[in-house]
Image 1 (cartoon, rainbow, N blue to C red):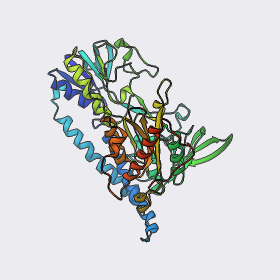
Image 2: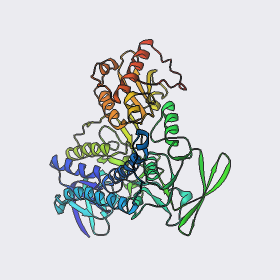
Image 3: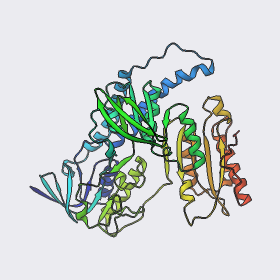
Image 4: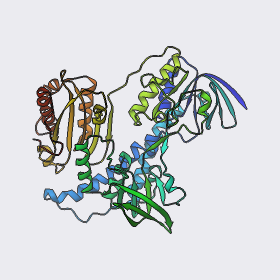
Length: 478
């Protein structure tokens, strides 16, 4: 077995690992990046990019369905599933190729192929070929789709989101287990492409929403298009030929259903099990993830840093890149530990309407010990530009601080919400007040005029010193 001694060992070559490697090198450290799986990042290979390619195809199909509402009539719609999936795979491979080009530019001596296992606080073994002694360590092992114990060993009809992007054709039917971002994005996209889809959730959650008013609005809006089942329990699943016989319990009644595939979309699990993390001498949380400082990515006061999906803090690509930068910088210049740039939280589900949360969430603001906060809202049902586009569904709720008038955050299901979310996230990070935001330009007619309506409502409630909003009342926007 060969031996290697380095300043920094980065375990994982995804988004966080690649950024951590470059950052550690920029600090002058001798670094090695270790990867056992395929290069290419989760985002490019089985995450953000291929899912958006599938969603783009679904939007094209939906435009045809929506056209008669404008008085425009096309011929009979035909979805070529083979062509749809061929483009998804082709463009996905193109995005992966860009990542691989970057990996190829890394010197060979700085890359180790194989799976790493820690054997001590400063040592790890890569497969059976290399022992690495590292002064500092960055754990960037990513995550994998969560598999439900009740659905173990069902058969080939049981899949995860990773499997979807290797399909050669669209399936006949899919049951989606989970109403998180992944489940809703894929469920709606497949449904729009003509696949029979049912989506099941144990509770009543919708993506990352915590505001009860937005949550109810989102459930209603999505249920108009998707066969959505809340408060559902999976009783059993059995492979029967080329289908899965699924039994669901809802409202105390059991219901048999059959699908070509059952897609587990119940979130992702950090890859920290089975890597010998217990040998690092770190304090672990309930989920097995080491406790760490979110400003520095440092685990306790140790020489170990954790970044990206592996730490399970905010498992989205922009955060993984920021984590990697902070972890790599600090590992490279250790023991000179410095807080890094943490941006305002922003999470987007690319359903239609988009589901977006940013800044402080409703749940965080309602936590015990937190001061009261003001709320403003707008419905997009009668918002001008939304009605013009026949996309007049959704609800935006914005939050502000009494006294200072500072804008704190928002949750929404909204047309063009991905763009609204960026504007509002910038306002949070800039620590703008609601009045300062209302001084900004608003063109006409744009969806953002709904934002102005919500901010005016919020400003009025801040002045009152209390919110008089009835959670069950939805006031139309202008």
